[in-house]
Image (tube, rainbow over all chains, first blue to last red; front, side, top):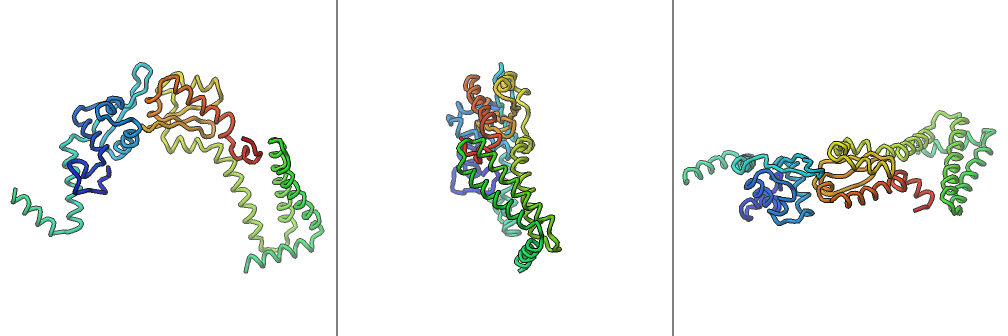
Length: 119
Length: 188
């Protein structure tokens, strides 16, 4: 999902490419920038037990980064988005177009030009 | 077919050798010790008889090895290497598995981010505490090390964390360090 190896065309918005929890977390990060885990769970209203594994996946896949911070003796993760929303959109688009060209070759390219002509 | 040939060869060598009765005696003693292990009640005695049985069996193998006159000793080599490898695995890997985990998880000493944790564990047992990069709250013990994820440090307050650390320290003191020995002695 995070690795874009599975795309659900019928889903809405970001959930075409990400799981619902991943999409919610990414939108929160894009909207508010750096965030601690507790802020993330508050903003997204998703319990910690559900976001923890997803956050690990997002970091591993390179969509989010985090640093360990020690505030008043308390250890905290601070998350930040690696790409802006636009950068993520163009990366996803490139990956999808690549796979279309890989599958259909010249026919895909022909359709791209038709598509941009329509616009 | 080759294995059967070698077994015949071993049998021939044994029957021709003067040592054969002694080897037979060693094997009988070893089996008797294994049987006695099942009847012993106290964990220490169970463990002692089990180790004795293994040592006697090893002596029997060494004696067989010594008197073998044939060239085809593949089965003996195989069994000997099995004994050596499994001994290393059982005693070595379990004891040093934490070293492997530290590298695999890229774990770092907890002193780097929290000051009182290592001190707290030192008072309970001799173990190093490591933290590793994961938001999933987890804690476990291996070898002489305790591992906690950053997610756990984040989620728990000091008292809750102390409870978890004490639990992991208990593993190190009682069970996890040598789970196979505990199992053999039929304890816990």
